[in-house]
Amino acid sequence: MDLGGVTLSVRTWGDPAGRPVVLLHCLAGDADDWAAVAEALAADGRWVVAPDMRGHGASGRTPDYSFALMRDDVLALADALGMERFDLVGHSMGGSVAVLVAETAPERLTRLVLEDTAPATGAREFPVPPVEPPEEVPFDWPMLQAVIAELNDPDPQAWDDLPRIAVPVLVVGGGPASANDQGELAELAARVPDGRVVTLDVGHHVHTAAPDEYLSHVRPFLSPLADDIADR
Image 1 (cartoon, rainbow, N blue to C red):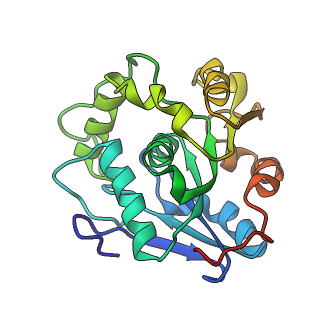
Image 2 (spheres, helix red, strand yellow):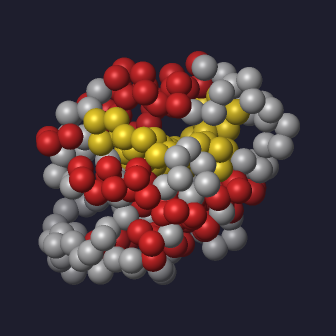
């Protein structure tokens, strides 16, 4: 789908008349990461949309990469698909992008699910990627370099703006098996007006490691299907 500044490859499941939910994958992933979850949500009567984020999978490679640009891509995609409001689910990098969407355009969302991710409260220490990839990879190498650089020197505004998120937020943590700080996930949930945390001790990739248990929490949390969807 041509969004002007970038072309995104997009997978969809279910009936476009259903309540929309957008799924955002992790760094170096793609829309296929969500297949099992997407099929289950579509079976509930939802319209499920999962893009390959810019620089990932079959989506376009661009000169510049940042979480803010990916946020703008998500909002442009929603506009192109006629989604006035939608549920948003993000894993890891996708969760970081989802937070920015929720902070920038809170009126566009109905529910937000963040999987094992929170805005950084300080500098990270992720290894800096080499100049060239050591082997062929299914994503744009400069994208990886840009994202790691942003993680290692984060904009604190994303954390400061958490109270702007005006929709219910479910944070799904991976527990002690995850390398991510689970305390930050709890702090995130406490900083938003309506946040809650559930922990599944399966590591960082919760929805692929324990899809049934993940869905048992996410399915009932997402906006009730009986809600009015006329403004979609």
